[in-house]
Length: 631
Image (cartoon, helix red, strand yellow):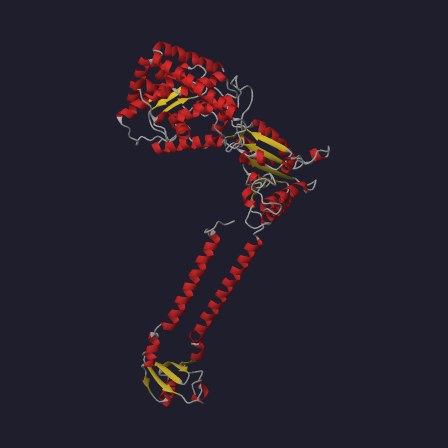
């Protein structure tokens, strides 16, 4: 379907051709109406007038080259090229004048001036007729177009990809092996339906792909169509809904009708929660609500498939908690496929997939990048590879280097560098002590994630960054790890107060994160003995939404005070612990800050050389590499 304001190439060519034709007709008409008489006609107009008898005598004497009769005018041309003219009577003809001697070489011709000037005489009528026809055709096409638009208003907007056009297969999908295994049976059914129907197995109506944004739900659906070699209908849930009631239901009927005609095929509805929300809840205006009618039609169509109709409905959502229960029951969406964010091995496989079409240097280590991208989805990893390619092209390099990959990870994770942001010497010093404070305290807290890099270069909204990376993917967290994380977050504030004996706004984000961790320990994880193993508050939103909308309060004022007391007690205790770590290593704190102010960005190895000493740092790094290689 053409977009608004976009003219297809073929229609544009027709418009250009029509315009050129019209211009040609107009110019031709003007030319023929205003063109001057030809030079021959000028000679005729100035010819000497003689009696008709003289021309007859010259004919008999063969002194003329030709004689031309034009109405009552007679023009005779001498051998020399000059003309004479005369007039003949009304009844005179070539025969009566004796100009029909076959032996006479003089050419006698009759010029019918009325026929010759017919085009000029009726040119205005021709132009008017052409313009009238053109206007009629324009009006007819406009009416046909408006009628077609009105008739197609209830037609489905689904985009169809033919089986030959769907090139995506399971080889192009990495990092979700379990989800692929669940969907391989659907592929097998589309290829060999009799294998299942002969044994009594029912045709699967649909599969619901559930996962966070960017995990590859749409890609998986296309891979199923590509593996099965069947047409692929794709549409977004919001495309069913219009301001007019009944249009959505009409589009659903049209979509399923087209799918049945092209069976076997796959219908993919992206963001189905746009029309599949719980009926009777928020956002619905009753039984005649447009979304509710659309949902009812989807339910009816999925139940109304013939047993022999090989049409599979696949849908994707990151809000399964808001979907109507009738949509989720067996017989509608028989399979619910959960797609989680990739782990370390899956991230490496995804990076390798996106590196296929890029020129990569031999020293590129995608495993290192996979370790630095914990918690990222497939779309984030694709973005990192693209940013790395852009960085390499910007430098004028012929291939993507490891430094481009590292810079891309930092840009996507922390934001772009802001070297244009100028800080005063005092602000630089405060920022340096703040970041080194994070690094020292985090390094001394054994349950904290290992230090990766310290930087004074501004990124995003932060004046500096201290980056900790987990050793491996973690799915559970201990209480001690929470405490160590809080202590590390407060290390920057503790360093500022220890060195400058004043408080700045630089630790505002650290305080928010530390407070959130402490409050969750009390309300969600039951980590306070006084509060007990009880969850306080009800979470708003879904784990698959990608954002947490917070907690709604369902506890008393007394419990609220205990939660606040626990949060403050934990924060105060860990803050004192952070200050103790820094006070015990004050000399190393100053040395690290001096080095950071000099080089602006410090790696973990450089940090260890100053904090632990070169020999101890080498030994610790060697042990860390051995542990990593053993895993």
